[in-house]
Length: 424
Image (cartoon, rainbow, N blue to C red; front, side, top):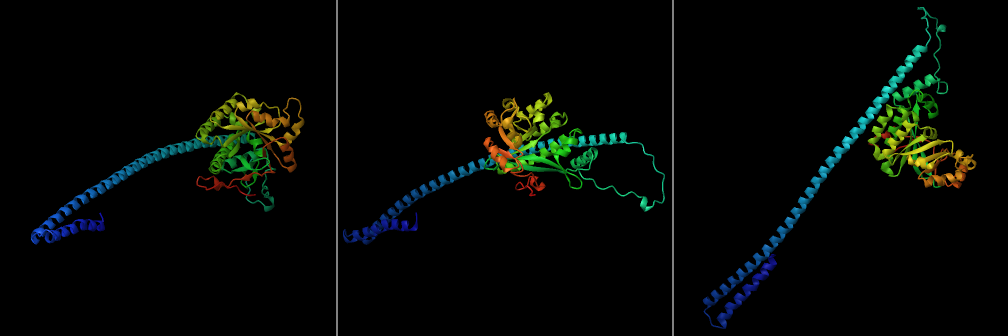
């Protein structure tokens, strides 16, 4: 109780006691000493009652405070239990994520080791072949004084256009060995809004002098030499890094990644490729593997098994380089194809196709009914957009909507804050 309340309660029994003392003397004629003793007794009784009441109130307050402390202690105990559970959960998640990341790194190392071995084998094979085919040349007699005019001038540096197949193959091999493989992204946009929905990942090799080796140049010599799995795998690594960055900004973003038929048939590369993708199947909604129509139509048992292995992991497919509209959308859907890219020229010419081909005006609806999206590819002029929209095409890709731009190397690091695409 507060001091004011105590003082008020004291007056309640002190004043009546004093009044009782004076009343006994004045009214009843008691002896002053006896009256004072009676008043004192009354005051003591009041004080005892006051003390008893105060103790009762204090006990209630102490009991209430103890209950509050008990509730607080129980809450703290629950918080500690929750914190302990969260710490255990975080430790388990950290261990799980660490194990997954280490396994992913080990799978990358195994694939890279295989690619390095392949490059070494192809280099050794080409060296042996060159040594076998080279004619024997008699060594010239030693000369101790050669006039400056007799020294042949150094051979001029040759560009990509001047290289023969052997020189181009050697340049490609050096680009792969020194990791001079650049990833370019070209947007795939919605029509008519032209909002970027997807990207296509394109690879470019760089020579020692920094010249770009385009796919049309390196595929011609790299495929017969068995080097396309190396190109595909490096492109895949880059695409996965880009997809992870895009997924942080847009949960619906996706990247088309091309894979050649040679990679599907490679008995050494593809099993390791599948193992690597098993550790990255969380990206199945963002990574779309793309194959040419020639690869899809010419797929044998080995390629079919490769398609099925990727589809079993949840990855979707896209078919590009479509030159014929003789398609079976149902079969393609069953094989997990969800996109088909047809050039604007083929689409516009396809409005009057030969017998057996799907009319371009019906293609979009037929694909839609089978769960496949049509993408108009290689759109380069505004007049083509108008004609394509007449065919109800909703996705487009081409230089008109954006040229392929290189992804900056710094953007592929895990600690990079955002994806950066270099300007031309």
